[in-house]
Length: 280
Image (cartoon, rainbow, N blue to C red; front, side, top):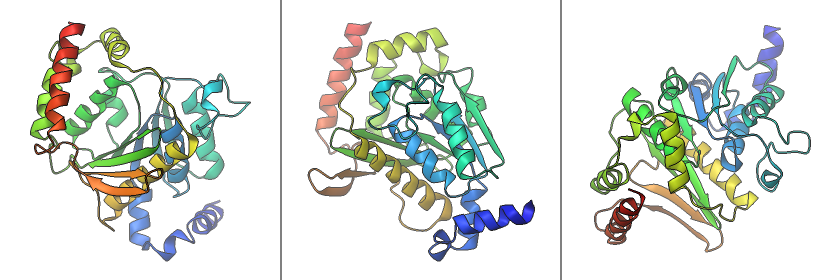
């Protein structure tokens, strides 16, 4: 069985090994990945990491597949509608790599009671959950000093960003002010599951347009940044910078959305202040 596993994995990584060294490949494979969100972005990241032969995964998503997921979410099919996304993702990982060591699933929403367990023992966190309360994942990753890569998409483009909490708090002045206004009513890390649910309802926007190739692009950006971070190969787009791609405008750039010299940030602070007054 050991010989079969070695032959299988070597075959899987044959083309990968033409660019990355055995040590670099092993560094990624030996890392435990905690991935939040199995939707349009999260599913493609799971697929791509599974094809690297990663040994250990922790998957979190509170939702089941619906018909509206079919246009973009990789694991949404006629026979997965109504099933937990994390269960389907776990099966997909094992289909790709039957020799994966461990896939632990959490079919729950993240809250202050379970976030520690989700991140503990992980070497990297992938955050693609779209609920405002997912902010607690950043706080716990910062506390445990586990690097985090996030990625989000909008109708015509995508961005990804690396928070290397091993060496830095990853908070600019603008971010601190924004979070102070946003969470003024109560510290996010002190909220009960019920309070987090209510908070999400107040802050969530209505569903936006989402196109399959844009969500897949986002997942690819996340995977690229995570691999660069773990292997030490290539230039990582570290916070506060982020990599922005808009194929509709033919733009690719590294931007700094939290810059104190970006005057639109002060407008956002004023808007958040007004919004929080209305909620309170």
